Structure formats: structure tokens, C-alpha cells
Length: 119
Image 1 (cartoon, rainbow, N blue to C red):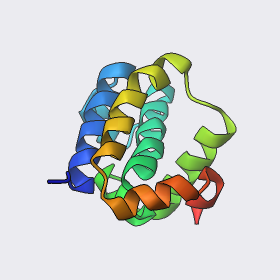
Image 2: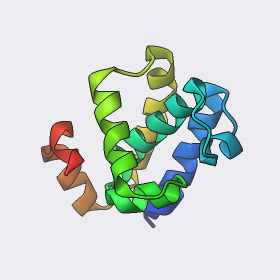
Image 3: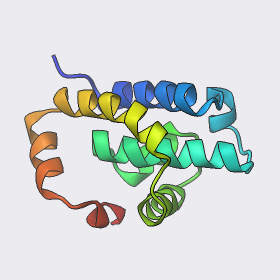
Image 4: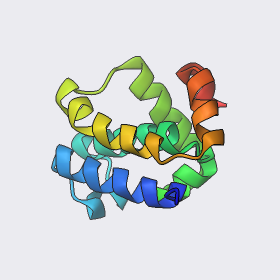
């Protein structure tokens, strides 16, 4: 049975917290401290990629008010690639999320370039 996108999002949030050293509570808080913002952006970026949740759904899952925050996070991560250490730790998790994705989700992920995810 495939994991639901919300389950994959929760797993990504746990791993982002672990690899960045930023607590889940801080990630979900309104804090604007650089390490917290980075962890939040990293998580939203990978959540969008691995789950194909809508921007609004990702925003809700990460405790944000609306989809524009997620769009901004995606743009920031695309413009300034994340720390290679964090990517190396996150990619197995994101890949496993991809592997449990539905056939339809995998088909979309296989053909949609990152630049179009902002819409």
C-alpha cells in the first residue's frame, strides 16, 4: 500500500529536523532565524518534489499561512542550492518517498522539470 502524501511530508519534516539540527517545533514556528528558515525552505522544497502536494497543501503541512511562502521557498532553493551534506542525507528519504509514490505521481515527477513546480 502506498504511503499518503501527508505521511511522506511528516517523514521529510522529521529528517529535515534531524539533519539540520532544527527542532520540529522551531520549523513550525514563525521564527525568522536563518537556520530555521533554511530548514523550513529545505523541507518545503523536498516535500513539493516528493509528494506533488499542491502549494497550499505544503504550506498547511509546514504551518505556513498560504502557498506564496512555499513558492518563495522553492525559488530560494532553486536559486541557491542546499548544503551538499543535507542533500546527501535527505536524498535517500526523498527517493524512498518517490518509490512509494503512486504510479500517477511517479509519471508526473519523471516529466515535470523543477522550474514548472512553482505554478
